[in-house]
Image 1 (cartoon, one colour):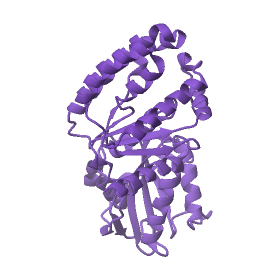
Image 2 (tube, one colour):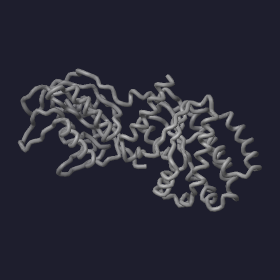
Image 3 (cartoon, one colour):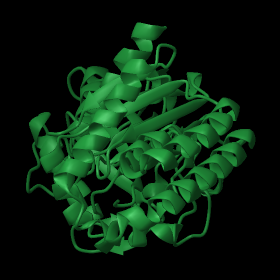
Image 4 (cartoon, rainbow, N blue to C red):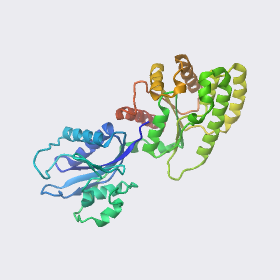
Length: 380
């Protein structure tokens, strides 16, 4: 999975319906550039560097997989769409919307089109004060100073006054009401990718399956009959240990736990891979362990059709997975769906992600979040 980057943007408007334009801009940024995590209060401040009507300004932080140049290209298009007209005239001018990249992680960029951190950041109260309100653990990569230190040293004495508050888009999806959320799905469904992305965006602790460390997995794909039982037993033991440890340890700095598996998957896979007598023994052991395990407050199954699964498996390129057969994947899908049907007390959400790419397409990711949001409000 591509790692996400933390981008701080400064938004300003001094023409037309200033607040409405900024709200509209945030909505488009959230849909097309990256997940908007926090929004500062909106400040009113005098025009900086020229005579004009006062500006409304705010700052926001978003997560994106786009590069700095890609972010710049996208925000220039959004400005144009929202009525910003850039002219060849030198100097500042009134504008319907202004979007500046203030910081991209703690990266230093110095090109003709883009300079980061923003070279005038330290001279502008209307940027510094909203930036501080985001409460980020960020240090200026050149000056080696925090935003609070930059505010203390700035020469800008212009008065900035809070005039409004805009709720962040994610505030309407209260995932933190759950202690433990499990994402499940077939091999290649994207559960680890989605789990990691949601954990970053919602400040959750991740529990990710340690399949890469299992010495029996490559052997199993070469000789299933011989290695099925030791593989399933080792997975069961590791999942039990990991979930027991991670769910028991309360993390003061995280709001909830999100996992890319639920321990019941052990029984689903064992039923497919084990001989009948082995499965009976396995089932007995599993039942003892399962009683001890906490159940997820929300169980989200990512359904993906078999052809798409095979494409994803091929694309991620794990050598031991390349010979997985369509029939095997279909049996796993049936196993999951049978399990879900049999669970009367499990809070289940099934999302068909067959036509979605929540890494490349921000709108696809927001579709998944919206499905979760509807589920939360439906069960509240």
